Length: 257
Length: 278
Image 1 (cartoon, each protein chain N blue to C red):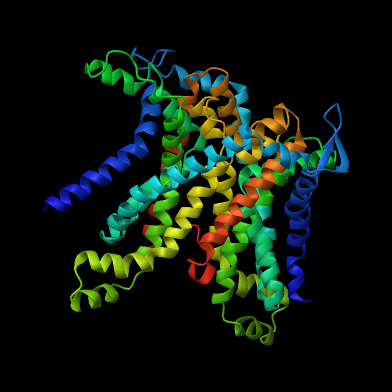
Image 2 (image 1 turned 180 degrees about the horizontal axis):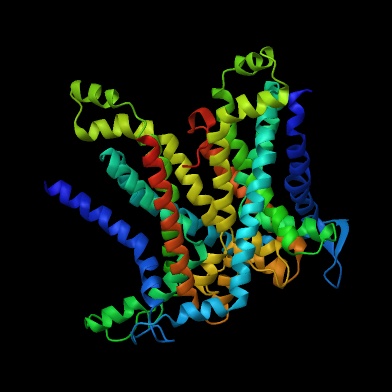
């Protein structure tokens, strides 16, 4: 019994440690005071000012546009790559897997500066396109690593059966193979999407002037004096994630029933 | 059509955007610098020699110390949590895991910024302590070594808990029952059965905390306030402020080496080589 109380206390403390900062930001987002020390009453002012701040709104747009596009491109290239790698000889497989682990093990800051060096060397203008290329680069390996295990679970005769029954190779892929590996493809795509959404390091080095993502915007705001608008922004994002999770959880529960 | 060719677009992409950039950095790290800071393609070891100056070695040492400290603290805090989660009922389990993943989905910079709000002189912690008359003046909580350490532990703790949990939850309970039947005490069961079986998860956790900790520049920048210069800050500074790309490249190569050494040291403990994310 005592042991159980200790356990609960320990877990409670750790969760408090994890969530205290987040809840604090949420509370302060409703505080009608520019100086975070004291509570001056409830307000929605920071939310209104946030929506009027077009640099934040455009950063939000860039963040989601890059996350969606990079996840989509990475999912297509990565899934094709996983299928190809599955059909390779063991020796070629090892080489390809090592290449795949490269961006996973390489620290983000090195990915960032090395891509910056590449883009400058290629005389590319830093901005939306370079950001997108960078995000696709660190996203593809995660898709490959998510899809590959599904390929190994696949019954190797499935495709042959489809072909024997008169399906074209394309039909066999879309009607037989893809539905089987779809969970891996979706996991990989979602992982890519979240990684892209949360990235700061790589974006910081590969973007040009005027093109911000949310992380970069927050970083520059913490440098140039902090406005309570950041608190409002964090609250919206946190509630958004929570809502998304609730929807996913509900769908998962419905599917079980 | 040969199916291997489906990998071709990825291969091309990897060569251009993964391998070539690292090759460029590797070349730059051996290049000389013109009086105006431009890159001259002449072989030199100058950039690496520069790194051996005491001021930079101190940065390297500080980065390693902070990374090791935060990794150990995450391990000590995280292992019991992973065990508790793995040992709870299936419905509770899902919620507890979700609660660890959720912070990862809120922006990393916002979470770190929240600690600035908590720790500053007029911050919540100081205000509460002063209101309770525990202290007279505000404590200097922000902009020091411990603040950076706290930020690292806070941000990277889930990376330790999740891989350990995923290994622990897959341990066949009959092993534990067998050990108990054969007269092992609780501690023996843990030390001789559970812990050895959880090692692959522990290693994943150690790597997943050590790597971002040794390469970060954001946490040290925000919570260390320029007082705590780490390898990451040095690289960022050389690339964006000092514009000495050759030296920045050399530091990056050192960082990659550091990580490869860590991976090499832990590789033999990691069975089947499968690195899992969570």
